[in-house]
Image (tube, rainbow, N blue to C red):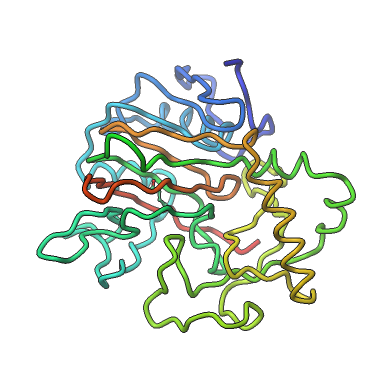
Amino acid sequence: MTEQTIDKQPSSKQPSAATPALNITPVSDAIGAEIRGVDLAGIDDATFAALHRAWLDHGVLLLRDQLLSDAQLVAFSRRFGDLDEAPPNENGKGGVDGFPEVLVLSNVKENGKAIGALGNAEAIWHSDMNYIPEPPTGSVLYSLEVPETGGDTGFCNMYKALDALPSDLRAHIADLKIKHDSSTNSGGFLREGAKPVTDVRDCPGAIHPIVRTHPETGRKALYLGRRRYAYIMGLDLDESEALLDEIWSHATRDDFTWHHRWRVGDVLIWDNRCAMHRRDDFDDSARRIMHRTQIKGDAPF
Ligand code: SIN
């Protein structure tokens, strides 16, 4: 695989001359890089600055063989910015004891109740919390137990997806905005208190431009959120559906995506501003337990 860089423009957090060189290996031609030789439990400021730069350059970072307590996961994640508290899962539980920022993603049940969110079903392509005015900056996902097959997590490079749009389509969507439904999560579950959707034009949720500018790299990226119950403001329903289908089938092309096969101890860090993600389903008799933190968004866009 050749060296690949998503962004070559300066960021606000560039490493200084004293920054250590990281061992960075792109994991695909589309998106993502593996960083070797860094222990996230004991990372210093200079190494973090280099890691942050690599995150902006590659959109998703993979670090293997990590051993993190929840306290260490939270402390590392806080280096990126303030963290969101975990939203309640389908059983109304948010966070883990002592760490309200740690969301459990799992299919495991204890005493008949799910210990985490999303279960074992496929999670469709999405950006996290696209349905709020200031969606999170990114997420850190750490694997504690993984199934032998299934449950892979995919990522899609939204810079590349925008750059490769046919010019007439890019001009057509330049000033359009999507209403991002807040009723349903990426596993297809209705959020607590939400009403079933009967007309996408009436769904609650934030409205964002389809093309957004990344606040740190200055690059433009597609921002689609999730396909289900999306609506392009101001268009007839049929027109909105057709245009969304066209953009989505382009954006999720194989050449913009990479899928990660998990091992225990893997950490993935994604930039929610330029990468969408999804998860494969897996056999419910297998156990999958992941702990996730989410970096707060800093501004509407
Ligand atoms: C998600 O954050 O949507 C799920 C990611 C995963 O469980 O791999």
